Length: 346
Image (cartoon, rainbow, N blue to C red; front, side, top):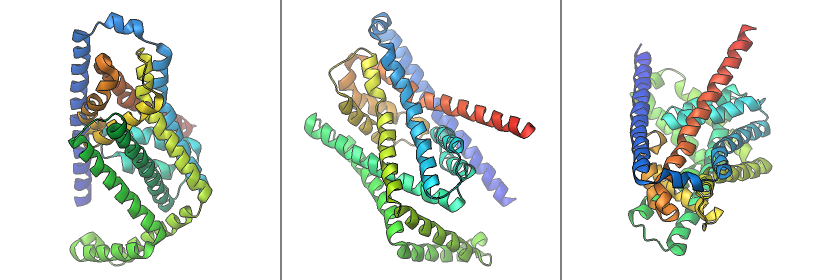
């Protein structure tokens, strides 16, 4: 009964968190649309639009998420799991949908990976290695973006640089912990055992007979599989290459919007690097869609690039980078669950 109440309270918190975040994001977006309508000549803007480039911006999200699903599939197959590509695409599209809504994203994506044919411990190992690759590539991009912003554009950002630097340090720490667990698991095992032993003295659930050893069995299996994945050089090379392509597709949205609004002068890689800084700093705001932080970071970094088109570019960027994720993930979820229901009926 207590566990049920705690679960209900957690679900209630997640719903409230998502509703508050989406409401704030919706208010900001509506405000921006009204601002664009009142301050810009929409006829002139529409005359300068290049539809094919805007279509390219809309394709960035499905390309990025499809690569994400292929990464799950490739890692699962390399680990010897009987994975299904459709299930891995579920983990990518539906998982990202819930990530945008709030803290339920990670457990739902892990469950979808398990449903795709990966064992529980391999699911954790693959998820961890993918997180490591994502963090390393993200960090590499972020460092390059900061160097570009400070030395090439010669922008004095002050607090923005400090915020990005703190996040980068946290990313590196997470990577180091995962890599250390894979290379030297014994110290991590000892630390986890001490934590579990302490919990067994203060938490009734862990005080049950055999719970500590059972949990340690899972930790040992997890560490062992991390080491096995570490030895698959080809799989890791594919993982890092795939993650680079995935993030590049995600960071490319502003470039396609830039060209779609009829603007020229900035190269593809310039806008990719600037977008990386936007994404890094917007993560400070933990609301769904990083509401508030995303818009502020975009104005801070993209304002000098888009000039008088910044507001309309921001509206289009939020549609492509956030609302489109919800629409794709929601639509994918409905179609997949409908097919499963039909299959069960037959």
